[in-house]
Image 1 (tube, rainbow, N blue to C red):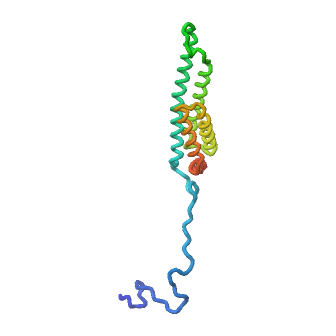
Image 2 (image 1 turned 180 degrees about the horizontal axis):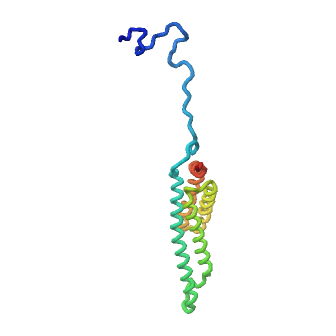
Image 3 (image 1 turned 120 degrees about the horizontal axis):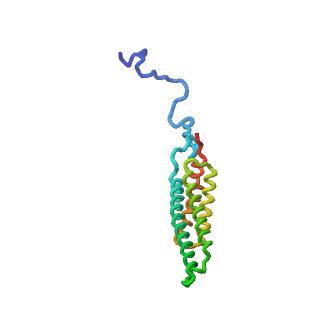
Length: 180
């Protein structure tokens, strides 16, 4: 078989001459660009974004710092109780109220539990968890300003970062993702 045969089914297509407009490149409508879905829309997210995962890690860091804080307040409460029991020994610690240290220990323990519950629910939580984590981060930052110590500065930075990471677009997309 040769390609010169006009009836050859395997040959090149015949040329049409004189019909219609000439097909020149650059004329006509351009191809439409592919449709892009915004981040977090369309297919459900299966992996947690990096900054949201970072916020969860920061919550666990706060849990660790709170364990240290609870231990320090309990130790201070025991030391104050011992200083008050030994009334013959003059001590500067004897002036401080013991109940205040135990109250701080209870508040630090409550903050520890709150941070642990928030961090453990990041995989399954919805928008309510995101809002609660935002409130936690903001309150942590505000409360950390008062005791301007090393632990206060660390809590301030962690609280601000948690609020920013969870409140951002990736955090919104993660906590509002569809769950099937």
